[in-house]
Each structure stands twice: as C-alpha cells, then as structure tokens.
Image 1 (cartoon, rainbow, N blue to C red):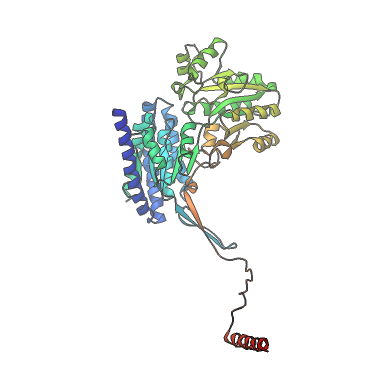
Image 2: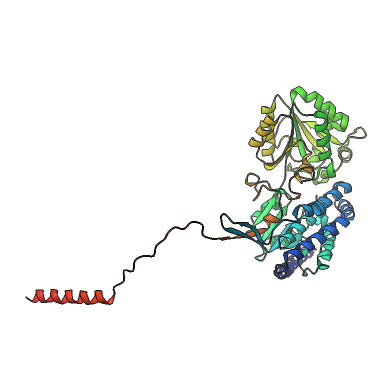
Length: 483
C-alpha cells in the first residue's frame, strides 16, 4: 500500500504543479522582454553564488564525480550560458527581413517538463531553467530519485531569485515525490507543451513516445582519433583532462582512443607518463566483472568513480597517481565491454594501420551506442580532418580539444549547453546544443512580394436587357411552332 500511495501522491502532485505552471506562464507571457531578461540575469547570479554548495551536495548525495568539476559545470550553466543568451531575441519580433517582407515573431511554447539526470543534476537544472524562462516558458522538473535533495535545493535557489523579481508562483517547480508514474503523468499531461529529456536511452524513448513534443538526448560513445600528424603529448593531455573531468560523467567524454600503428607506441608511452594505466591479463577480467550488469548494461556502481575506486572494487593493485584505466580492446560490440559507453575513468584503446581504417573503426564505435553524438580528432592534417567531418554521423566533430569541455561549449565556440542533440540518426529531434531558440514557436507574418496580376473575372450574370431579348426569342419560336 505504501508504494501505491506514493505513486498516487506523485501523480496528484504533478497535476497540481502543471495547473499552477500553466497559470503562471500565462501571467509571465505578459511580462516585458526587459523584465524577463532581468529575471534570467538574477537566476544566473543566484545559481553562480551557490555553485560550490550545490556541487558539493550533488557529490554527497549521488556519489558521482568531483565537486570542483561539478562546480565548473554549474558556472557554465549559469554565468557562461547567461553571457551567451542575454542578447538573444526570443519573444516578440525576433527578426525582420525587409527584402523578403517577412517578420518573425517568437512566442513561448508554454509549460516545459524537464527530466534531470543523476550524473549532472544541479547544472542541468540551472541550465534548463535559464533557457526556459528566457523563452517565456514555465518549467517543471522531474528529478532523478538518486539526486532529489540537490535538485530540490537548486530549484529552491532559482525560485527565490525569480520571486524576488516578481515572477509568478509556480513558474519554476519540482516534483518532490519522483516516481515513474508521476513522471509519466507529467510527460503525458495535456497542459505540458514540451519535454526536455536528458538521460538514459529508456527515459528518452519514453519522452518521445509520450505523445508530447520532446527534445531528448541519450548516451554517447565518443571515439577519439589520434592521427599521425598530431602533437601526441598535447593530445593525451587533453584526452585525460576530459576523461577525468567529473570522473567521466559527461556523456560527451571520450570512451575509446583510436590511433595509427606508426605512432601507437609513442601514444601508449605518453599515456603512461601522464597517468594512464594499461590493464593486463587477469586485471582486465576483474574489471569487466564489475563494469557490467548481468544483462550487459553499464553497472551504475562504477559511474563517476575514480580509477583508484574502480581498482579497489575490482580487487587489483595500481600505482599511485593513475588517472584512467585503459584496455587494449580487440573488437566492437556487446561481447567487447570496453567498446561501449563508460561514464567513469575507463578507456578502450585501438590500433589501426592508417586513418582510413581509423575512420571505419570510429564509425563502428559510434554505431555501438553513440550515433549522432560527438567525436573528437587530434590532427594537424586539415584534409583528413575534413574527411572525418564529412563522413562521421555525429552532431559535433571536435578538433584538437578535450571532448567534454568542447562539446558543452567550455573550450569551443559551441553554445554552452548540457543537453546535446544527436540528430535524427541518434534518435533526437535536433542536432544542436539545445538553447532558448528551441523552446519557442515562430509566427511568420508575410507580405506579398510578387504581384501575380490576378484580374477579376468578367461578370457573366444575366442583366435585365438580356432577359427581355431572350423572352422575345422564345415568343417568336412558339409562333413558328404553331404555324
């Protein structure tokens, strides 16, 4: 009875939150653009001020990652994101093409349901709140049960900042009783206009099958190709900086390194110098046993853990200072565990003959759970870089940069985001880094630009004179018939 009662309370809570959000959004839609922008600014400042505290709460509650890196993500989601979107036109007249005589008007979609992952709970909540309000929408969060406290605290900070600027109650809210039934009610509710889903494959599929429009992004299986012209020392440094960032919990982190045989020994030596440890023999078997569930999925117990933690769980001894555990993998597929996504400090390592074989292998790795997401290439050969860009089914091909930091817009010019579209090939409705521009409807006012010279049809109606003439003709015909 307790479980059923909890589910019913969760559903009822969702219905109340949606009702309040709908009412709040209608009021919020009347706010001036200037006031909305100021509210978004205050949200950014409030989240930035609490970035450290929220990061520590997330690590303490979930057991995932490193608080200093989660703090960085909180800053990206607040301060850096705000700088990117502050001058963006999202509501009212957003564009006017005088030559084509088209005026574009941005309008909010309404109430947004935001699903939050346990790996990046506070930063994702901050980011989604800012882009939702910037586009004039209300937002309701569905937190991961494992990250409930830190998500609720994040929402509390955001709500307080919004209320201080006169935002209506209910504009930002969060489920306090997260259940599958409650989340399903939220996603399928007739007054929810759009779902922003970030998380596992099953959750994203549920969002897309809910009947409500959705922007969902799932897992990545990011390959990193080190081509022979690359600066190997810098490449390894960047890969390790990315893979160790928050202990690999960002889905854009590298999952496999692919390099050419002619530089393979140099790459391996550099990995070992900088903190990579190549597993051997029984060590591989021991790690494999703890990295997967019996069904072949990723074991949640290793997510966001350090190399030292994983070694202890596997019962193996590694030197001090090891940052990442590496396995020289032989193939790609379900029977090759290291070829899959690993949101922790584990990497697969592959050696190929040349960049053409490397291109094919990277494609296979992407097919094994990362289609449409991200890939990184380390190379100084622009021709080969372009070949990869033209042929790889990814939404982001990152060049000579850490994949994690590059994908979320920290080390590149990409839009700062924690929801990274994977395009149709990856089962997503967009291939962009999702921002406020994805959370509006655009109304287009179009004036005539091409006079089709349409002339009014001639009046073919019968006038009075025509009727008299016809009558005379009929009378004459009748006279002739009598004769």
